[in-house]
Length: 437
Ligand code: S3P
Image 1 (cartoon, helix red, strand yellow):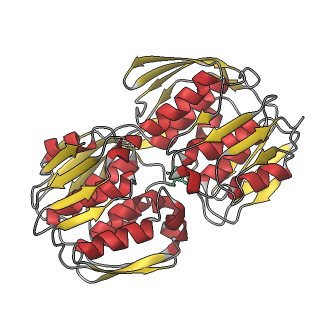
Image 2 (cartoon, helix red, strand yellow):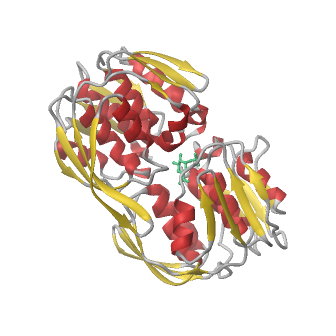
């Protein structure tokens, strides 16, 4: 892969009206459910990031015709629950944990064998959290010795529904089990310690499936067909988060982000920033299918450090790298706990953010399940994103309040979730340059 480095000048500003790309979680599910449905589904606002393109390619490899009408529009010709064909080789899911864990459930129910593989980062991520419950449904699925990919899945001759109490709040685990449950005998139920994002439940309902869903529990009966449904994908709040933080830490700045998904299982970053004193307004609320959407108006100011309540962690899980930057710019100390899941994302995000911020002169103490961050100022320097898209974008935004340039290494994977990030940020006023090769 070509090396990509961000060189970001200190200062700069953010202003204007921006639309960030489509939601990654919803784009994955639109391809998956559209493929499994009876009939043709149009997907608008699709995220053409590498993760979702891996999901699209996997379904094409299994015989689904998916037309790329434009960069952000797909026409998915569904093959029905039982219409997938054996792929010619292993399905390569790149950097995408969502593709791997959801498809582990789906592929366990197919009458053909598959192998799911990923890149170096995905190949280190824990898969027992999904393979164990699937095995208890009767799946024949093997991970590598330490429970990591590749996953080798064989036909099992029929799954049975389970009632599963998940030890982690994980939408990927919940969704993988529910997808297997669509093919299982009887009812499949998943309960979680905190409510994880519920896009699967909402979109399955839009595709005509009866789902029981309350915060922290989801269940469905096997054997229900999916009926094609058009999907309008909101802008991704996880991508918007870099601009929410960037604008919030700059006194005097004003920025609007349009058509952002504000599903309550995803808006933890807004809650956290508001508790730190940020001025974020939700304007023009509306629905895109089953998903709430709003325009977010942000005005910058001086933030203050807080203790982040455990209850906010699940709904802000992907936004912690950006929240760490907000904390570094706040007055006083911020304490993050109850966020041990950050250690098993695309990289160990607690360590990557702590090391990066320390390199920029910010006093951060990593904790097993979070960090203590002393706010104040950010110096310049060089940080390693470790190939993690969200770490790379967070440190780019940090330059807005830095006293000297910030160089961010290993940024190619920003394309997994936010193609065009540097250009959009530059158009809004960030002094970002991109060096390749
Ligand atoms: C996702 C769920 C979350 C999140 C990931 C996308 C999804 O992971 O971190 O970026 O689309 O279901 P977990 O479910 O493992 O927390």
